[in-house]
Image (cartoon, rainbow, N blue to C red; front, side, top):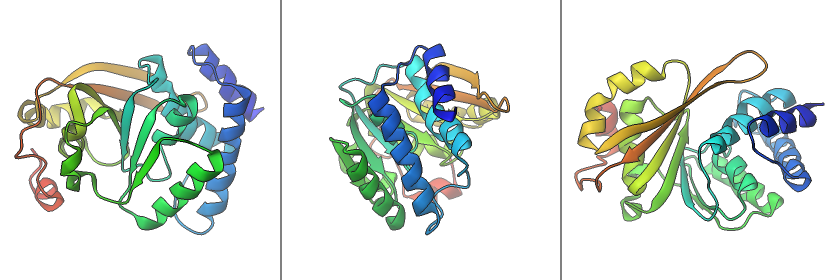
Length: 233
């Protein structure tokens, strides 16, 4: 029932999921459940909620974007959201998972192995320390990492010129955009599109912000995280 509902909701959005991909999501859930007994990966662990609030929530951006043969970095990926669900759905996507917590990286290594995913790199680092990857990615995603005024600085430098930062946000997205107005100017960014939707079980509101880079990143940014947190742009 849960799997059928998940499949049907994706189909309604024009996103087709194969039986093999559904099997991968089943495996993903089982590993998430098992590892969550040993470490704090997610507060949401009931199966239907995981398929809705983690898997579907990660995938629905495909209504707006074609990820085939693209290069994506998922910043603060945690248990792999949204990067791993997007990789399952887009096997040709080149994925870099950026996660500062070592124990979560161990989970991600095992997950990638069990799902038999190719072209996945796992970096046990903070995003803002990866200066060597500046202007490298077609897409950067981030979910539940920081408010937009902070998130823009620690992620946008990774995007290529005309690349897209996908910030997965909730109902307070408008106030976050207003709060980050100076960061948009300083970092040469603009909101290109906003995907608004409700999840199905409890009308949980989502807003996925598609943010474009209009000029190459200034070498002054990102600053170290202490500065970013103390004095957001």
